Image (cartoon, rainbow, N blue to C red; front, top):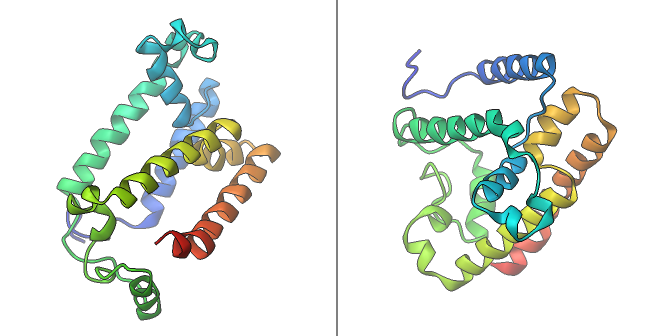
Length: 185
């Protein structure tokens, strides 16, 4: 198997996630990416203006290594380990995406309608990204954590609130794709 250009089997990341969760569980730590934003804001001085950011950020230093690893890993994966081939998806999905305006469906690795520099010159795309980011940020804070924290850490600890949050994330995602996205675009 060509480890550079071929996608890795799903079970490699599954085993890696399970191992990390076991190590975090044994060390008494919880995983979640959205809490890192709070730590970063505190590092930048937000604790001087808003009480929410006034906490012991040094207890979360280890989690900043996770952020750095995610950024470095994402960069390596996109630059070194990603082939230029499109993701194999069904012809039904390609047709459905094309009716939604994604002409690059089935031809590009990422939809160029969203991930090209030209798309960032469209004010509508900028507004959707901005308000989507606000809603995701608000939702993550309101739910007490993000999808990775609830779905990976919370579910592995058998937390009912995490199960409810993950169900809500999926329902919200399905509503966005099937109901709201066609209305917006």
